[in-house]
Image 1 (spheres, one colour):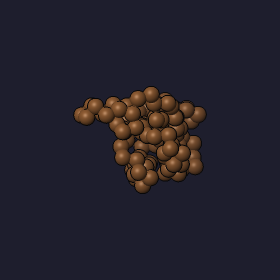
Image 2 (image 1 turned 90 degrees about the horizontal axis):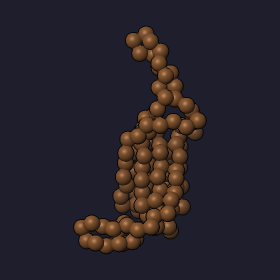
Image 3 (image 1 turned 135 degrees about the vertical axis):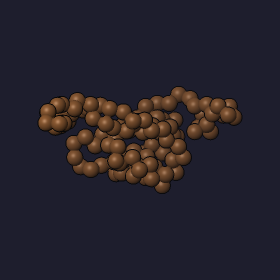
Image 4 (image 1 turned 120 degrees about the vertical axis):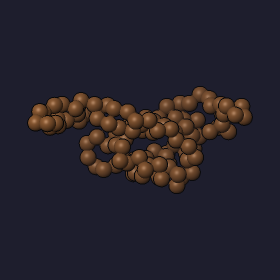
Length: 112
């Protein structure tokens, strides 16, 4: 099993969710986060004063799935989240040792 964590632009969330649904992903966890990468934030004007926005709003999407689905899921996220501009985000893939469904006690791939 693998855990895919994607940090994307907030307005791309619906497209990513739909793309994952089309390939058979049954559940995702979404968190509103803030951060920065190469774009290093930006400056904004508020009531005539200029200030620096260091941390930009992003959305973190987490998906636990079987290893056989990872390649398709990464491709779906990449296509749906891409704008071709800086700040599109990142995808991280990590090993998931175990999963347990609390209601039934199922473990491993059956739990996800």
